[in-house]
Each structure stands twice: as structure tokens, then as C-alpha cells.
Length: 117
Image (cartoon, rainbow, N blue to C red):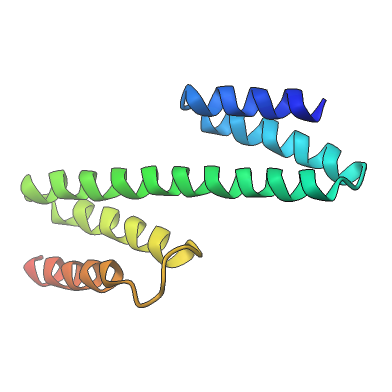
């Protein structure tokens, strides 16, 4: 069952249905924990972590692109909101270092836009 759920999760991931993939992986993880299969638990946990990284990166890219479009149109308020969403993703996600230069750049841009308003 676990292998079947993992296959379904990978198939969903390939079709960019990340939430479906996550659900399938979580089901597989639940079963692996139920039967105390340590190697499967570790493997599935890593798969979930990688999937989460992909989703966060997509969200980050979307927010940065959307804020850029809003800024070009002169919509500074929405631009600031998208900057803040991107900043929250960077700060909240464990992969990125707190001293990441992107965080500093985003904070500077937010301050600059606030001054424009």
C-alpha cells in the first residue's frame, strides 16, 4: 500500500498537483508510522520536505513576479503586499538563512516603496 501511495504521490507531483501529491505522501507516512517502518518514514518525510520546498519556491516566484508587475503599474500598495508575502516565505522557511541577502533587499524595497506613498 505504501509503495502504491508513493507512486500516486509522484504521479500527482509530475502533473503539478502538489496538494494531491502531499496528501498521498501523508497517507503513506501514516501507514509507515503505524507499522514502525523507520526507513520508509525517513524516505517519505524527505519526499514531503522536497515537495514543500518546491511549493514554497513556486509561491516565492509568483509573489516576486506579481509585485514587479504591480510596481510597474504604479500600484505600490499591492506591490508592498506581495513583497511582504515573499519576505514571509523567505523568513519562515527553514532552507533560507536569516542573513540571506534577498531578505535585506526585500526589506529595503518595502521601505523605499513606503516612502514613495
